[in-house]
Length: 237
Image (cartoon, rainbow, N blue to C red; front, top):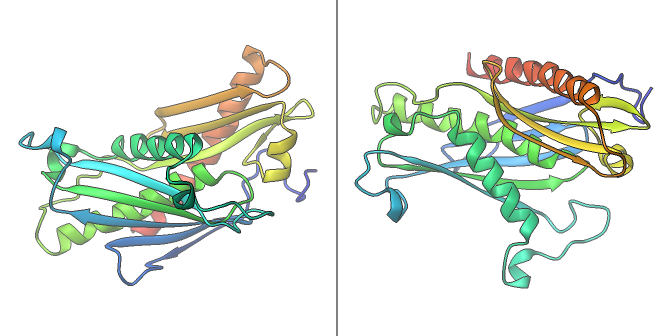
C-alpha cells in the first residue's frame, strides 16, 4: 500500500466543482487529493498578431501558484518581475494540450485564455491544471453555442493528464508530493479521449528506466486518463 493507502494503479479522490466563478465564461475548481487548482476560461474576440487574418482562433494558458499553496511560502512571481522557467514551461504545456482538443478554424478569430491558479499543491499540479482547464474550456465554448456565436462547439475531443512514476522500483499512478519527491522516475502523460498521446514527459530522477518499465508506466497512465475522461464527459452530459 502507498502513503495514502492507495493501490499502485489508483487515482487520488477527484472532485470537480463547476461554475466556481460567477464572472468567467467557464470555470472549475478541480481537486485531486490535496491538490487544488482553479481553472477559468475567458473568451476574447481577438487573436494574437501572428494569427490575424488567418481565419483561425487561438487557445493559450497562464499558470501560477499562490504563495502558500506549498508548505513554505513561495514569493509571488510578479514581485520578482518575471515568470520562472518552470512556470513558462507549464503554461506552454497547458496551451499545447488544450489546442490539441480544439478545431481552431471552427473557433474563428477569437481567443480562449485559460487561467490556472494552484490554490494548494500536493503533486501533479500541471496535470490537474490540464484536466480542469479542458472542462472550463468546454463549458466556455458551449456558452458561445448557446448564445449563437457558434453553430456548434469546436471541441474535437477531450484531453486529460496524469502523472506516473517509479517509486522504490514500482510503477505507480498519480503521485502525491511525498511520492514525487522520492521517485526514481517521474512522468507526465497528456492524452485525448480517443486514446492518442499529446505529450509524454519522462525523466529518470535517480535511476534510469528500461523499455518494460516505460510500457508499464504508459499503461498505468492510459488507465488513469480513461477514468479522467469519463469524469469529463459526465460533466458535459
